[in-house]
Image 1 (spheres, rainbow, N blue to C red):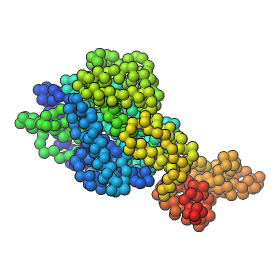
Image 2 (cartoon, helix red, strand yellow):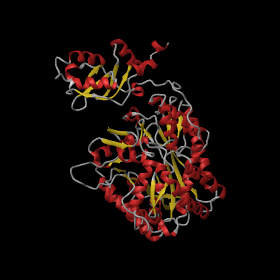
Image 3 (cartoon, one colour):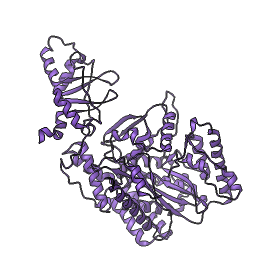
Image 4 (cartoon, rainbow, N blue to C red):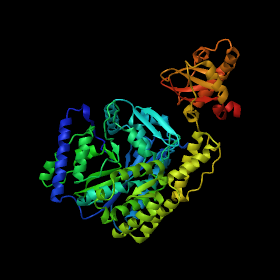
Length: 625
């Protein structure tokens, strides 16, 4: 749970005071490590469940604050966007039936959220990236009105010095600029925590890095963003780029992203990891701190290291080192941040059990990772798994493995051994790890989504396909079954009819021409491609006019008289446009009144889509009644 009472450090007069606390937190941590004041005789697990809120039409809801207030449970907290919430589960000791207990609490709290959400005509869904998120839900209105989020947004933008840029290349391409950190809100995770004895932290952390690739590859659940089919786990690329404060220049400089896998194996202690992060990443948030950690420690107390924890919360390592205090004792833990929310709670818990089993079962030969594995192999495995999921070929101890073979032949035996070592009930070990085995031989959440999205797209528009896919995921989750038991989607075109904004039905695959193009070329291409309406762009990409089939026919008749005519000479310059949030009914009225065959969709005079008569016919009550 993030700290909400924060300040934008770069403008705050007490910046030096906060940094003083940050440096003293490091000194306090080092003293505690040296004196053995950090708990090392018990291991606990914990988790955080992020989830999405949906309207009855399977689009992002904006009711998070009202629902959170109605739930009235300290386990729940806000997230960056108004369409997400988070559950913080109670930490439990790693023993016997701890995973079954956590599973029960997770299902109980999700049911509580679902029951409350229904009172607000809202659904609860687990998914890594909600398929129906559109540009409309990435506007500033959808940012949760909390000081932490506002401060984070302001500071990230100031450090960046320009708008953020996304470029993700998969089966489709996504290239877009955005002016806030709200793209980060598309990411919904199941974060897993494991307490680590401080003397074993570096060995455990490096091992966690080494196994990240195969665990991610078997657990992907985020293949779609803004209707584009991208990476199997698109969250990995999206999260890094959505809050990337690095800037490009003509100089070739190595800059560390705030969201990263890292650049090398760690050494020393957890304090050394924190020191490196402080050295690399600017302090972007601060808070008022009443008492210095060194003073608390000198008085025999246990400091919470508030400055260090706040700074650490703005550095988004996929395996994040964490310090905490519980029951009057300090502890350190690793937070696994790369697992997507969903496809089901049972799938999530199986991944959790698998990860913990691997962590506890680490063979002694992996105690010193630099001696047995090149860090670049671990990092490469992680990126390949994010891109292609189960189809990735990974390097493991100088051998190439498919994700399936690496899981089944090398890692599952280690996980079984680790869970037995931890005293986990044999029935739970078999139940959860069997799910991982079935998934290795079957499909991941991403594979299920892609298969069904492609099937739906054969018979319906993208918006309908995305909403039906989302509805089907919700219905499958309600059964409590794992993704390998989910049925194929069996909805037909027209099953949903709630599209009401132009942005829901517009085409974003735009064919445009430039105003200085030769008219003969432009009209010829229109004829070849059987395109009836072509927007005309200026040098900067702004909409300057429109070519229609009528213009093409007229030009063809006059072509022999003047072959030097440009598009600007024959286009319509006074073009009526609409926005993506214009109601479809309003667009239909415009098209009827002016007998338009199409309407360009613009934002700040830049073309972002187009709708035609063909697009609006299903929504025209006068025609369909």
